[in-house]
Length: 520
Image (cartoon, rainbow, N blue to C red):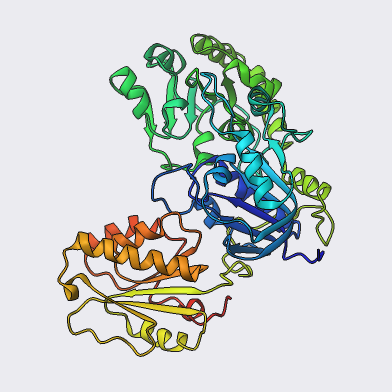
């Protein structure tokens, strides 16, 4: 077998996941880029979510980093290390992985195999067997922390685990300076998490014990409080509730003294990314006792009923509070990007210019664009196109890798001579919208299966629902060349539709590069 490599590292997962999974991938890709390692990011749709979501913003922000390529499972790739996050993604995906090769296959187990209620969240034996069949070698199972390791050993002791845990890494902003005092003249308790049932205690009594409805405390919640409201019957007057994504966590954490995280008794946190963020911010964190195995003396531990006493104790002694705050920050900063570069080097992925991590830009849109699609591009146009787009389409016709599908939205539509496939609109076929959507989905499904494009470009005003449904979870780069929108109501819908695309460009942007193969 040739020892030539296409990239150093392949990062593979379901990029629709909005939380810690994709955030952790993004941090690792930044570290790889900063160290001079080349990376292919590969999306595979699994059964981890059933919602027609676009890719996580965490992933979209790293695609322009130096040395990063966006590929699909259909791209033939050989790497030194393949990192797969979320065992369920590998086990449940129906996409063939036969074109991906790597010297080492890492399965990062980023959540508990079995929860406190005994519910199994993924089958290690079945996943291990699928990895061996797909890649021809045994994977290296890598829990992200001791809690996950314990649940994996509880499920089976027949599958070897990596000696050391694959801890998440964190490149914290400089905005997190050491604290010098309290935020307000009363204790400020806060928390930030996704709005899920498991992230909250299961009784109103425990919720109010940890997050009191009292003028003596300020309580700030980032991530919504629907679960708590359902259990309590109302949102307590003393709470400030901010929806999920409504405030930058960095700014939010600077507005609280005590980060209190009490959750459902059946939940076992794998690592606690939100917890690590709170420690880096210098909050005094209070967590369930089992998390001491993860965070040691960097945090405090209590049951919900004991939270207020701990808050009062540390509020009463400023120096004690500040000492705990410094311990928290020291702990968090030990999980640096260099840790990730070092473990990749142990697996043979050694940076060409050494192993030290240089600071990488968080979102450098001017960085190189080697991530762009390398296979066919499927272009779907619907309705009238601006003059600039028409000129770009004429130039793009010279690109042999461009497959142009035009949807005729008028009974008098005559297909452009460069169109590869003309699809009649509902009006032209005299169909109702539901029947035409089914027809269009069937046509697109056949095209995606036959062409295996790496990029799909939609050019039009609002994307047809059939197009969004068809592309949901598809392992392709999705680009929307947005035609002029005059109707304000349509504009509001366009904002929601844009979330389902990786790139949205307007008619004033240089669209030629997407159509003429300049990034291929």
